[in-house]
Image (tube, rainbow, N blue to C red; front, top):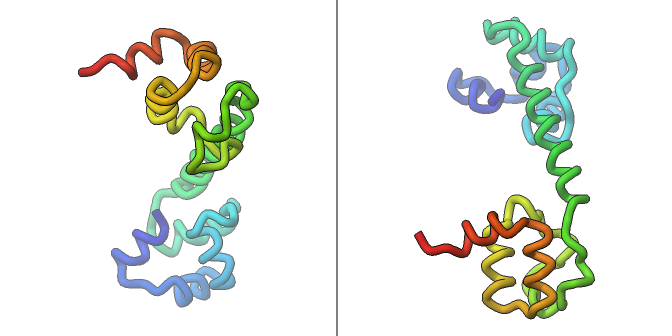
Length: 137
């Protein structure tokens, strides 16, 4: 959002960072999501851009919540030992986001999986979800 605002106003990131008394590297790290914005910097940025106070900290909180949910969902997965490595030949099974990619996972397992794999998917996602995804529209 900050990067878009700077582009819209024709401001370079480096010059803007210096205008709010911040290192350009710090601002770049915040824009790329590698570093969190702190309250003091958010206030300086909002004042410099004439944006409502609290706007960037609210965005930061939503970003933090999204990151935390992703981290938690990564730890929530079906019993991985139930799946043959050949079923997910094109990816590391430990890296699958089972919620974001549930449609692809369910379709793949029900097209190519064995009884044990299908049973595990049914147990993990539930019969209603699997039926909804596999039923043609």
